[in-house]
Length: 189
Image (cartoon, rainbow, N blue to C red):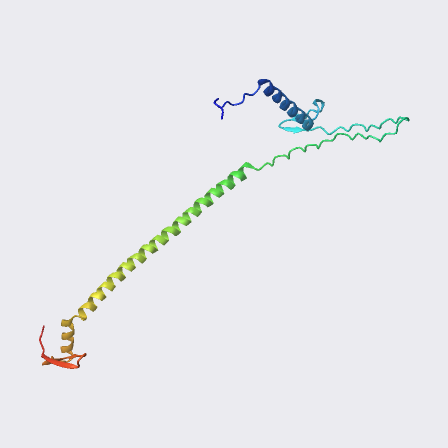
């Protein structure tokens, strides 16, 4: 490694100028080959540029010399595609255009109103269904409470007495592992 710090190479100003001139000459020759010579300048008519029809150069025939036979050289005329003029703009009646735009805006507004109406109708239907669901929840809770009251021991005893059932004097318990039975007096507890 060297002890000198890194230095960027310096460009020679004369080389930069020469390169710029070469690029300008190349661009100029490309432009001339695309556009043509100055005598064939395009004709301007308003905003549309019209190119002149290509001029055909006469075909040159080489002069034969008797001393040495050479192959024939034929010079072809330089042709360039002609530009077609732009088509005429189509005239659309202004009232028809304005009417079409107005109809489009009105159709959009009507569509939005119909969409809003359908959404609101669905919202009312949803609110009605939520109200029905809350009523059904309350009915379910009332039926569950009634079932709990009917299954309580006091309610079962009252229903048994209503059907003519009587309380026993003793209650017999059976213990399964040993098959032993125990009789105990009935208590109201």
